[in-house]
Amino acid sequence: MISVKNLSYGYGEEPMFKGANFFVAKNSKVGLVGANGSGKSTLFKLICGEEYPEEGKVEVSGNILSVPQEVKRDEKMEAAESIRDYLNPKNLKEDYELMRIISRLELAHLSLDDAPQYLSGGQKTKLAIARALVSEPEILLLDEPTNFLDTEGKLWVMNFLSRYPKTLIVISHDLALLDKNIDKILEVNLQNKQIEEYTGNYTSYLKLKKEKESLLVRQIHVQERHIVQMKKGWLKISHVKSEKGVRQRINLGKRIDKLESNLPPMPLEAKKIKIQLPTPTWVGELPLIAENICKSYGSKKILKNVYFDIKRGERIALVGQNGAGKSTLIKILMGMLVADSGDIVKDDKLNVGYYSQEFETFDFDETLIETVKEKCELGEQQLRSLLGRFLFPGEKVFQKVGSLSGGEKTRLSIAMLLARNYNLLILDEPTTYLDVLSQRLILEALKAYKGAMIVVSHTPDFVEELKPSRKFLLPQNKWEICRN
Ligand SMILES: Nc1ncnc2c1ncn2[C@@H]1O[C@H](COP(=O)(O)OP(=O)(O)OP(=O)(O)O)[C@@H](O)[C@H]1O
Ligand SMILES: [Mg+2]
Image 1 (cartoon, rainbow, N blue to C red):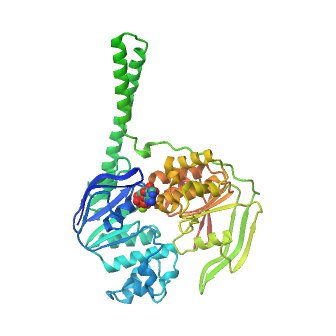
Image 2 (image 1 turned 135 degrees about the vertical axis):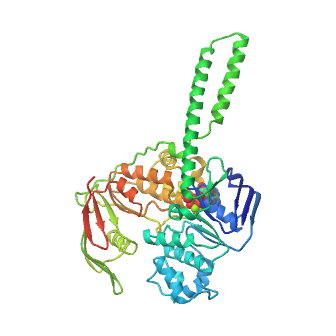
Image 3 (image 1 turned 180 degrees about the horizontal axis):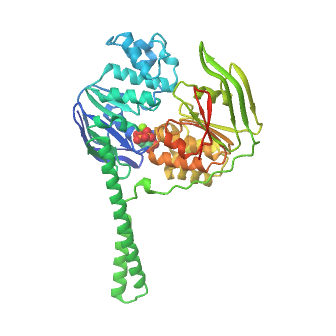
């Protein structure tokens, strides 16, 4: 059971929660949603007791385990001698059961005897999820557990969770996969700083939410029209000099001000997004060609005689399951990994920008504006306006990069890629962590980008909207021409 009453919390002047209330009953399944940066991950910290409320009460009964969005440092993992030790300290499960879980999380290639410390960030996160599933706490909090998984892995995790016998709260973009088992949705409302409860499953939440938003938009339009009428009235009496007229004008002015300042903000999704980007530096017609690329890990052949090329300004989608070799191919093209054999020819004007969720080069102690200044040669004013367009307004630019939410970090990385004049962007899963609005924003920005692009994404709609001219399929090692 979790009971939150009158919770207030925030950083600096801006509150994240203001007098928020909600209740989670024992053994219920709850989805936690809200825009990027609205405070979902922070709420988990408050529930676990890693952070303390400024005001109000957070009451929890039952033992609790929380898996964060990105596992960077996990003390238990660092102390464990083997993956087995870490997953199963109380010897609750047999080896074959542990292997079953980790292979479903696409870690089949690991051995239970391996040391967990050398794994990549994504692998560590999956292992922490596996540990949580094995230990079955009375209250389980999962922060985007499907992020590092492909479609099959996502289905498996959500199916497993649908049968979870105890209390569960999940933050996820894939709640649709858990739909019929959800008892309640909690939504962190970025605008009124409340945590809103929607009893029922995810589909009914989406429906209610849509109705509520369109009602709000209609109400705002009515109010706006009313204000316009009042302003016209004010203009009509603006030159009246009598005492009564002046009083009337002042009173009307006050009412207009009050109505305007009480106007609720438009739902974020309804705002229009426009982005202009610098022109990429010039490059030849065929900036990158790779021929006969082969790569094996041990005895496992990943890439076999791969031919890959990209034309100036062309968009290519790289499609395949996890483990099919997409990231391997990308790293070889980037020169971050050496192929066993094959040739890569690059135009000497080729200037590649790379995004991957596991490849953050941020210095976490720097502020946002310092980080951007270092990487992009733009003036202060241009930088501020760029950051504003990518939803980092005002004082936000002085926040430390390390304290940004998952979605905010992704948004910042992509904003920075687009602000520099790369002529080829390679994007490995650019939409993980992003909410609907941020996805839209990044999509519009990428559509406006004039350079070439290789994109890997498990979100088919996103890929289709980018209108790639070709798809490269792995492991089939086949090209497909797209009809756009
Ligand atoms: N130390 C800090 N100083 C200032 N702001 C902070 C600090 N830590 C977090 N924030 C801000 O608090 C907000 C909430 O962060 P949180 O990580 O809880 O968001 P979230 O809802 O989990 O977002 P996402 O969907 O992107 O993961 C974000 O805007 C973040 O930038
Ligand atoms: Mg988060």
